[in-house]
Image (cartoon, rainbow, N blue to C red):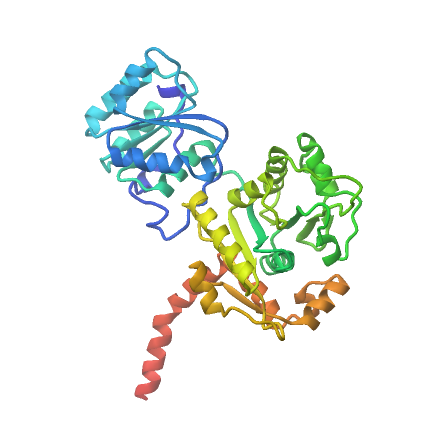
Length: 433
């Protein structure tokens, strides 16, 4: 058997082999895969192109992926003289009988422990069962799309029964003073309160972070300690370093001391965030307005990105640059969420929201009006907007952003659409009466 492993990922009788995340109307939630070697042998150039595009996705950034043509024949010839990698992706254009025979030949040259994803052009449950019996880990029916390919490879390395890995939301300002930290903290507060789900705010502005002030906390330890020794960070140490703000909200505070320079290591930052996301469902990362290597990696590899901008020319230029960078680096992710903040500042000329959106080619998801008194009181008291004035428009805006990030707005829309026909029928009956 291939790799001496049988791994039935789904129940064969109930499985639709052609189903994709897009077909189900859901965004794929593939987890990042570990540092493995992946070799693909394709028969169709379109399949090879899709796999190559998938290999450039952030979730496969640690893997080493090579793509070549030739299918099973090329793979068998290649592995006669070399060891097999961690994962082989094989495409076949043959029917069920011939394909089974080809994969038996592949099994003869596969090393124990090698995983296999098969790509076929036959939607056949019997073929799927036979391939699983041979030790193939996953079977996908062509034609493929990038998201489906990413999710299939991810499923091989992640147990679907295991607890889901937390999602990272990167909050970054288009320029200094745009209010990104305020948006980050209040949105995290709204997620913790509305979903009653655990959230950690990671304040990465080490010398000047405001998360401690905004939540009226003064922790002795925080994220700087974790970044200094990332290899020591585990669930127990993480719990000691976090400062609890409420039942569901914790703070990974910045030291805000200037007694030493803070040079953040890219690998250390990645390790710390991986540990945090393994222990909580949501991680809100307050990224300072900088484009150092570590900050860039945090933003590009996060599950969601929120850009906070003010309605002025500098913010417009920087927002456009950020969006262009993200579009290239994250082609398979949702577009960033744009928040237009401090709108209506007295005596300040502004770019209209419509003109701003047209220039950056992205509509703001939220427009937050300037309210000096409300935001000033919250900042000086170490409170969130929802604590100072729960019924205010900014509080509603932060709850709306929390809903967007956690897909609650889509769930509400689906519930509303289910009631739509019934409500329409009741209106028609009332009109006839």
